[in-house]
Image (cartoon, rainbow, N blue to C red):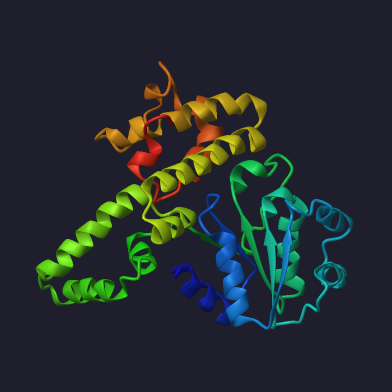
Length: 296
């Protein structure tokens, strides 16, 4: 499936002032797939490291985070050579290793010839904010969101319709009725399916709304589990209260988030940490009203 993030990654690769990249965003929006696909197309090889599936990897960064120390070890772990300018190094689930995040600073300062991209979810919550200093100014940060309507239409093999819509917009002319009706049908489908890549892929293959809804439920369940996994114990309940109240907030005309609707007498200061860390930054665009309502 085509993702617009690819265009940004191409410009990042060719930028002479390139810094290590952190691709952040909610879970299941396609960060890992996009980085791997980008590396496959635009590099000679990809050295992929996942801190969730390979927990001992963190021990290497605990020993030393200088690039000249890390590169030979990472090459050994990946069972392939890591070549300057020709290998894309991917650190996945980097929020699980704060030392790896810190190492990005030294890749920028000491070894900018290595192309390093990291993917992470819930960075504002998972990282120990009391002990960790984010490498400000030493990394490029890009946020990835679920698929937008244009990406959804391309996944549905409607590239010609996308072109017609763009031409109509650019020339300020009405879209012919046939194209308009087709576009509205796709828009209604997008409202139900949403933009999570797994849901879109399933819908393109099956047209099964029940299957898509089940997948949406599983993704939401994963988000709920992350609240317990990454939040401090005293924040879990408050984060869940904010999360469960999102649909209520979206249904009102006032666009400001009102904590009094979360809890009687609720104030921003009471919910500041969990809401800033999870409920707002990580609420993915592209989720539908259907997937955010009902039992959630």
